[in-house]
Image (cartoon, rainbow, N blue to C red):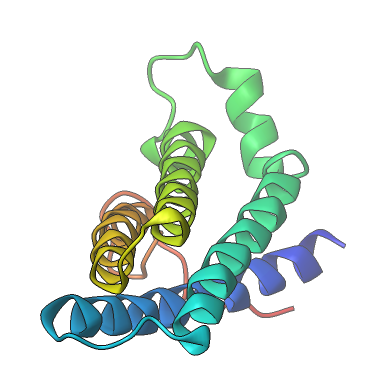
Length: 154
């Protein structure tokens, strides 16, 4: 089950990034031009937040079943704990939770805006903030913090 969840979490990351990038594009476009915030934009706003929530729930499930996190919990007080364990034990989950909170706030605030311009602007700003935090917290293959492949395999 653990390896299946790792694969799913690795795969879903791309859906989160793709939906965020597309929603950000639509948000910036609508912020710059006087276009209506239509049903598609509203669905995109909601779907992006939902995909981020699904990814976070998969991540939480992994967090509480991960041997890496178990090792971190067992050795958290050690001063020479490898940085990778600290990254996954604290930094990754904290930043990803913050990112999803930012996306959720942006989605909710955009929905409540009175004008189309306000909806696009709110969505663009909050989704951009969430995307920046996600890009920092992902263990990219080139990351000096902790690195993992672009997609995990079974």
